[in-house]
Image (cartoon, rainbow, N blue to C red; front, side):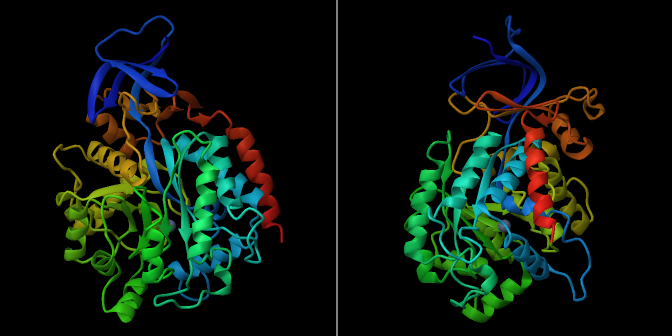
Length: 450
Ligand code: ZN
């Protein structure tokens, strides 16, 4: 049986040399180390497991770069959100599918092999249900299928415009469901991903702004053992509003009122006290960090140094998709700590390598947040990345220094990416990238025209 052979590969968080992976039905069926390639084996230099991208709003890829001009009032998260609402007002199902396909193609080219799609654009531009209430979820699933990326679909429950059951604004009409409507949407979403190999469907209360405590409890009962994602404590205003509503901060409220356990992913969790942070670290829940978006939106910096030292689990997400880059998410995560703490090499753990610590952490935490087991192991999907050994960043590097150099010193550094053993990216480009980019360009040209 032909196999993939790597001069060196990151298996079970350690570097092993001369690795041969046999693959059957998309899964790794045998791993041999210290062996020569057999005739017919595909040979590569440096192998990594694919990374999970635990938080994406794929359609926002279409407005990347459009919110970088200063307005007449102070620009912040909320003015960005107004622009995002105006953009999504124009999107139909075909548009969402085309934009999401491009986003997923770019994720694969960046070394992400699974995406957690935090999906909240459910209804038509007038806020009415589509004939199939899960139409938009089906479009997300179609984009995942076309690109080949693994999908954890997180249909979003969104009912209110602020804490305490505040009425939603007109701009939020495409997101809204009551609990019964959400249950139907969740059913439809599970159906939409059923045909995708190793897809997962979790649940996602949008935020404490968008769901009342009773609604939150009702939809949690639908989760089972699947992932539960929520935006939380991204903005200081959100913290102030939560304090005004409940007397408690958002993460503090969630920890006091909800069973926050390893099924949960707290997306952002930027503004936390020492106590909220250490309780989160001890809960087994994942901190869903999105450093590029958090920087772009001026959210703030998560206290990653203390959180990791406390054993907290984390993953990375491309969130607004303003720029899709696994290495830049990890690099910025470390650089944010350096800039705020005035130190170098902050996020090291048991091993001194920042690159290996961040890569292994994002792989483990991100996989758990998306309801799967990640990494190269027998029985798991052959979701793999090879680095380009000809890239000057990797010359005379070995072991963890390969990850340090990839994350901190390479431009892209990726050669091939496989999903379930199928090679989707070659020479750094997705095999269907050209047609995907053409379709995206046509959609964007129309959306931006008038
Ligand atoms: Zn988000």
